[in-house]
Length: 315
Length: 159
Ligand SMILES: [Zn+2]
Ligand SMILES: [Zn+2]
Ligand SMILES: [Zn+2]
Ligand SMILES: [Zn+2]
Image 1 (cartoon, rainbow over the protein chains, first blue to last red):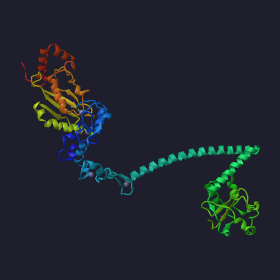
Image 2: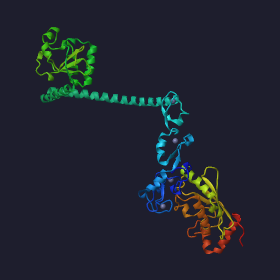
Image 3: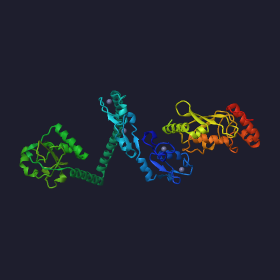
């Protein structure tokens, strides 16, 4: 729909009016043969009903509509129009082609979003501030969020239920694989290889580490520290089938003969100095895996690997 | 009523009121209430017709979808005319139906109605009885129409 004629300053030529809405042409297009011009919105609405020019009834359809000549656009753009927020106090009179940019920043626009200053800080259209009630708005917000939380609780219960099912299935599957492994040597070989691959993949994803202070070793970690290490291992993607054994191997009572006491450790210092170590992410601890340390002798290594925890000195 | 309809009717109402051309033809429009959805029209019977001297009142209802749909117009004054129902005042005129165009105005409609009164189209009748009489007994038709004008539209008696 066109702009109301009363908003314009000075005379507006009859040619610039839309014959349908009688306002000043907004977004004008013209019919192909007769060249009658209309607001785009107005003529589209009319063509929904009849495929004719509303002025002379010549045949016209939507696809035949054309842009109006530049001269007509220029004439329109030169018109001066009063801002539509004049009722709210805007006194701006702008050229028609700058109306949009004015409106986007017009301070008097009653719909301009504005943050509430009475406490809730919600952003609401300016004209709604008068009837705005922080408590009411926030209560609605809380209710909406409560509803969302309830929905999420329901989802969670569903997932938990599904997860239990999956865990059960896994247990059954694991048992099945174990049984297969025992009775069929070729399956055992394949399974062993898969597990080795998995360990190597995990190992190569961990950062290389260097121990600078072997003296800071904590060879008898308490349960709390062990759990701590276990959690870090899980997060780093440690293969499940070695996790528990690996965690056990962070205590000297499970270490091989070459490491099992302070004396033997001091004696074998030059050996473990050459360990190829991996860092447990975020911890002052390293993992020594057989696959990374093929040349190390049996009395300095145990399956599925060693964990050494330090007070400090890991790089 | 939507903005276009209101804006249009306001302008057209002013146009009719100010128009000297329409005053000369004795055409008037008045608002009914203040909503611009209903107006009252008034047409003087054209000279040299059986309607001369009569004043005919029209009911004009502006639909929500104006000007994309035509106004609904009906004679409130009883009239004897082939294209107007002698009972209900309903009008058979193409521009009030499928030949309506969005650029037409109250002015166009009222002038067309006056033209219709001056030149009936008996082949496209609204009132079959009147149309038959119009074609077969034009003199009786003229007398009846004139009588109706006199009785219902306050016209002078033609001899
Ligand atoms: Zn045209
Ligand atoms: Zn328009
Ligand atoms: Zn403004
Ligand atoms: Zn608030």
